[in-house]
Length: 175
Image (cartoon, rainbow, N blue to C red; front, side, top):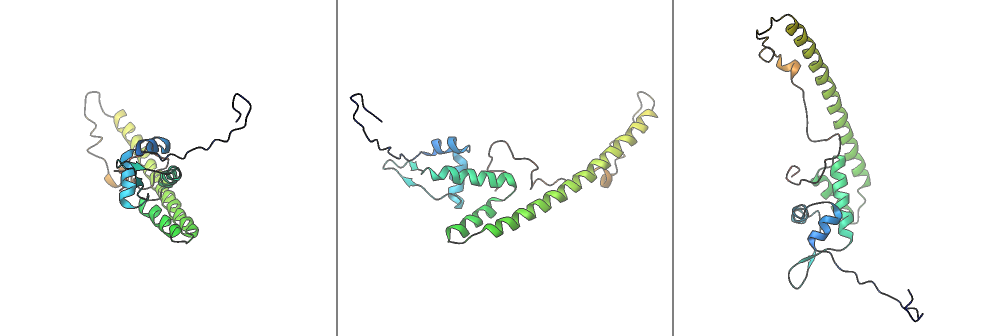
């Protein structure tokens, strides 16, 4: 940059550590999430200011985004923590990450198959109910719920592997 009198000046940008609220806002997580990740060792404990405030480096943003993205993919916090520990110990967890991702994909494929089967059963039940309702006099009960065949009508749903990323970041649901 140049000053008004034309002399070149060199500016040094002071790297200012972020406080927890700033980090949370920039990384798209809550302050409670950050504290929890510190508690379980996913995020290194930060330095503290003289007043006791947490002071996070810029690199904490990418770490939090990596954790959030890995969770959206289907990895557990325990798995992510294990990958980080291997990497921080000088190892390369890439093949372990790939193998775990393949297991997640297989689980999602199974979930899709189970949901597809459940959907077919539900559609069959609705057709049966349509026939029953067509043959039930107006004002008379058709006993639709009472006659459900549990094995055919109950879908099998597993919440472990969401088919789409969750909006927001809720720690309580994952630990």
